[in-house]
Length: 347
Ligand SMILES: *Cc1c(COP(=O)(O)O)cnc(C)c1O
Image 1 (spheres, rainbow, N blue to C red):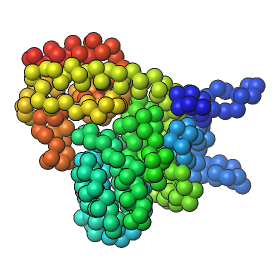
Image 2: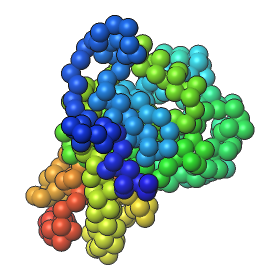
Image 3: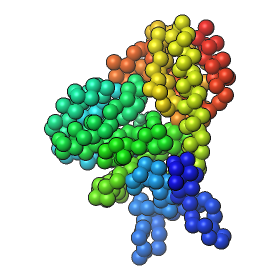
Image 4: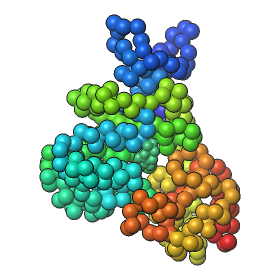
């Protein structure tokens, strides 16, 4: 099956009389003993349906978590004492925050590198235990050469992890490019409606799957069954949403580039996140308050278009320009989106 079909059909009950078409929400903290699951922290049929669908799209086995950062923490927790973790200097600020926290307690050594410089990034992997990639990066929108870096990192004996939140498995499948683990903030495009917090890990390695499952069982950052159901419901329209949002983003990136008030536009040529750089922090602050249809809000990947100046967050790296806004382009009519941006730019 092609991915758009998989997104609609994966994770459903078998086609048999009186089976529901959708996996039901199973609210269960415990199960009658003697079976496979036993307890609510170890498994849930609604998670399994969602994990089957995400796993099928990424080409591996999936584990879901209470949030994207719970999934990130589970992976970083694999690194042994003082192990070196190499990551893009413009990784998602929550990931950088976890690395800084672990480093401050002597748990790991974090090495943040410019991910667009493939040779320098591979060289930095020399003694790494874990190589973290995010592509495109949030919010700088830099694209990594995943295959080349994965090859170099594996030669150095490191595991390779790719945060695939921005691209979604429809636009990029990191396991096929050599990654060992894929991370998702399923809060974003997979769920797609700004109403669920959800994370996921996917791996093609059975031994690694068992280790990660063991960490989830032990640490307990498990998702709620209702959230798992909502995420899977959202994924049924993933292909349509990504297709429409991406077309809108490409069109808006072109129009923004031609506008005299715009200093720079970042758009990697795929996906639906656009970086819009205005003159300075003040101009960008006025702009984010000046839009009416677009929502001034953090997060991304929902059906509705949102934007924010990223440096309003103290945790954002200082190499991110003060005037950079991150636009998460939704699935509205592009003319309405443009009219609102153009009016706010004039103001
Ligand atoms: C939002 C985000 C996360 C964190 O996910 P949460 O669901 O908010 O915990 C991780 N990585 C990227 C790229 C993100 O955008």
